[in-house]
Amino acid sequence: MASDTTRGRGGPSRRAFGGGLLALGGAVVIGTVPGAAAASEPGPRAGLPGGSPGGSGYGSGPWSGGGAARRTTLRRGSAERAGLLAPHLDRLVTRAESFLAPSPDHPWYAGAVLLAGRGGTVALHRAIGWAVRYAAYDEKTDTGVELPPERRLPMTEDTVFDLASVSKLFTSILAVQQIERGALELEARVTAYLPEFGSGGKQDVTVRQLLTHTSGFRAWIPLYKEPTREGRLRLLWNEVLANPPGSAYLYSDLNLITLQLILEEITGLGLDVLLHDEITAPLGMHRTRFNPPLSWRPGIAATEDARPPWSGLDRGMVWGEVHDENAHGMGGVAGHAGIFSRAWDLAILARTLLNGGAYGRARILSPASVELMFTDFNTAFPGDAHGLGFELHQHWYMGAMATPRTAGHTGFTGTSLVLDPTTDSFLIVLGNSVHPVRSWRSGSAPRVATADDLARAVPVRPARGRTAWFSGMTSGTTGTLTLPPAPGAARLACALWWDTEPGADSAVLESSADGGTTWQPVPFTTDGHTEHPTGAAGGWSGRVWHTVSAALPGPAARLRWRYTTDRRYVGRGVYVDGLRLFDGTGRPVFDEARPADGSRIEANGWTRSAD
Image 1: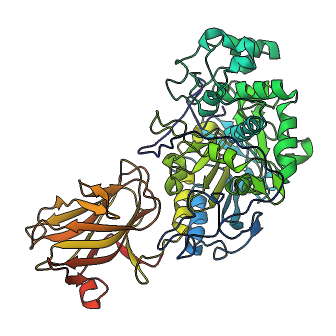
Image 2: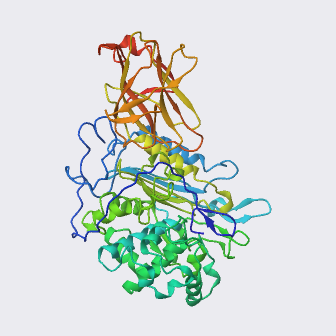
Image 3: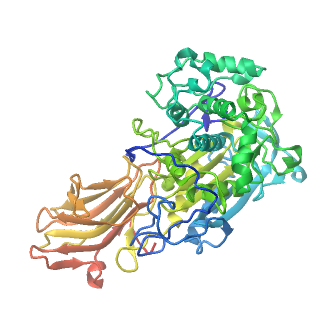
């Protein structure tokens, strides 16, 4: 199956997690391709490397205008050159390697290729484990039949993977290119291009709904059971929608298969030809294609011992051919799955999109088109944020890299791509997690762990001085940062930086009038105008520092910041800096910058951090 989760042969289901999402209003205009000039990228906002004063972002995207030109192509370099913290990149590898062991019952993957970077620098490119480890799967003992050591193939940095549903991104890019050129209308009905499509209540489905999975299609149907193209088309034309168009989000392979048919109809070219001519050849992605030749096979990661009942087809160990049954039935060329690629090629694609559609002298999209792909069209369906083709703000695999503009996709075979325009960083995790069988892999723990580590590798500079208080990024925990008693204190002032899992994790300002036995929330304001009446801050705050002001409920009150996380996912965490208390005349009665005051702060779970 092409989607990232499945239940037996009943077709794929899709996990998505969300919360408070950023709604982007107003019309978005598609621009024409402005030529083949290289995109320029602005430098960091004034103040500190990698962001605004005390921040860690590049604004709303590297193509948002202004600034000095930066590198638009990739190079290998150190973590320092990428503006990343090396210890956390090292931890990324260590944590990824832990999933080569039972986690908890079976390895999550036989091997993987990890690639992480920021700006034009790839700071991490590492292969772990095996590209080919098993000859078969023994369902009676639930074990893999291992190949002799001399026949196993280790993973390499250039190992090619079956991308599964990450292929959908390429189909989406091809569609947006046609929108740029005026050959395809985003709000047009599908029947304008495929008249036969309209039966089964599908006459009102639009191109946009295909790209955002709001068409009403159910998740999957077994097209591979029809041996002819005509039979597969008949199934698609006669398919009855599960929901009225535009009324619900439901991830479906059928959306991108339909989009493939539209593209082939309006261009007169096969999807494989379009992929080559419009994306991979201009960008120099030389190891990205449908149906890799037999000569590539030794450099491809094996997938599954595909046999009923867990697979719809009896194919044995699949290696060098597409894993997805429907894509296999379509000759290996499909809009929803079937593309093979390597980590470096996907890094080129990531850099192209973060550049605003250009890589070096090649341009495949206009900046306005990239903006569309990173804009949430699904604000009516909280938790299922979606641009054109790209998923947005999904902590369930983006981990702490998730922001309202973080874009990405996963593939059922164990692949994923995450792009964070806010920090100009990108993460590629390619694993063969269905080798030897799909039932060994569940959830997205390695994706989340590696994304958390890359997010942590992006430094957050203190607002004042050399260090700030940091909450950490541990799930299922509570930490407190408590100020000492300050007689006569009437107002708190400090700087606050937060990025947490929306709707689940938050930092709360609290006071106690009985010496710390009981605590009550304290309302505060940020930046002089934003009210926090419950005393809490959580979700997305732009990854910049905010000024905090709070009136104390009484002269004898003690104050603390409490940060609590649930057991699911975390964001980048919370930082507090410049803690000061003032009396009614504005005189400071406590200032953590004074050593005698700062030493009296009680930190439980919080640490001093320079980054």
